[in-house]
Length: 318
Image (cartoon, rainbow, N blue to C red; front, side):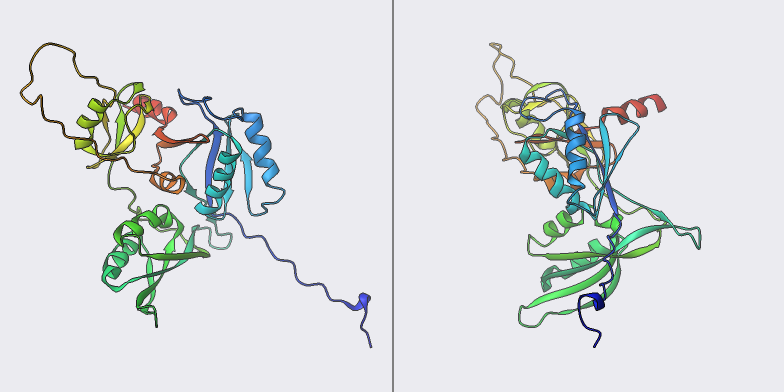
């Protein structure tokens, strides 16, 4: 009887979920800036970020105390890295800070809360011990564990704080030799865990000086850890050129050249050879970043470095 256009009941509106992770995106200020990108200035970056808000409804952009840096908040690390990758392909040069979790204060209890995610990992049974160990280190709470029928894979379900999710993917893929299938979705906000969640357990190898990396310099530096650069790559002081094999950072001189003297060397005929560098993707770089490091993004390269602003604060504090 009451059918018709006037009788149609509107559907309840879908609420846009609030962001859980934030990063800073700003102008590339490294010594090697401006060599490749088409869009370099803060005005161009600002216009592009605010234009993204028209179609990316879960994204939030805020201006910071610095005129050339913006705070971008999203629904997780992947949400933000997709935006950064899109801007990189468009020709932007950017300087990106490490991801951090957005905390909220519960109005009823007054306690600080942090986001938690439901994580589901499918993995061959022989790697299950390593997966459980990594998730426990990141303060995860086991929900369920079992075998998946047909596939022959073990399945484990955890609740993990979003702080623990930062850098988790690369750790799990390393521990399972690339066989893990990882799914995660935001679950809820819960009271913040007081404990510090274990981050990176190894330091970085830093370039000692500006210049181009040499074969001789890399041969000497590769004993200290795994390098991310190859000969003739441009480097600058404070740039991260590799992963140290121990905790703590170490400066290495990858630009060192062989002394051209007529003195004979005891190991003259011995050549060690260069180990192939680690190929770091955008996701891997963002996951690797520590609190005092930044990522420089150009249309063809990713370079990580120590944040010069934070280095200045550390020296003043000494």
